[in-house]
Image (tube, rainbow, N blue to C red; front, side):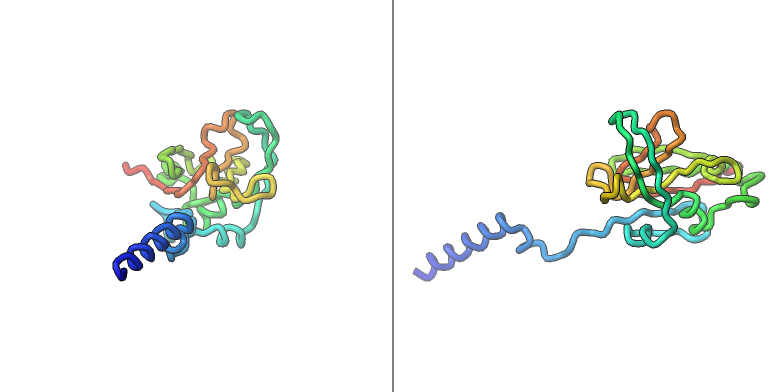
Length: 172
């Protein structure tokens, strides 16, 4: 009888665990982070909350894939690079002109921008790391971070599920 009761209790527990996964998994989900790293003075690891505390930029763009107008909000990449200590403005000359930023996504997608393309002394690129679309937090398919390059004629460098921006100086 004792074995039977133990078996019944075990089955009840396992049944509850399958229907309520939180019983077995007591830890909270990992916090999403965006890394700014590479050839920078101060590598950063930023959360959504960190981004929300920074100066914000809103972009209204036409998404040719979905054939609709979208409004993204986030932080200019130049602001993030500045906080990490990447060369900008007057510092961006000579050997520093051979520097690029590699954007990597969770799914392995990767794109490149020259550092000058992102610098407001060279052009008004308005490239942002977005965390909202049309006033809502990005979904799992797009976010939690998305790189949006509004002046590119094709959105091929719009990186969904962005995980990192790596500054790379090309060695001579």
